[in-house]
Length: 65
Image (cartoon, rainbow, N blue to C red; front, side, top):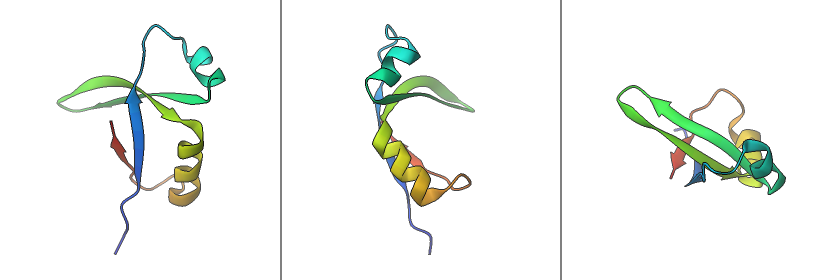
């Protein structure tokens, strides 16, 4: 049985540009989909790195905002 991989996200301060966010060790992102309100979020760089190492590039990841 497959395990669920989750990633914690925080709402993004839209006043900060993406480059400034990256300098602080955060990864900017956007969550969107059908019948879903678009949300700007930010992730901790190390958390994203660990999820990519564990999940690879072709598995679903649950994002907790």
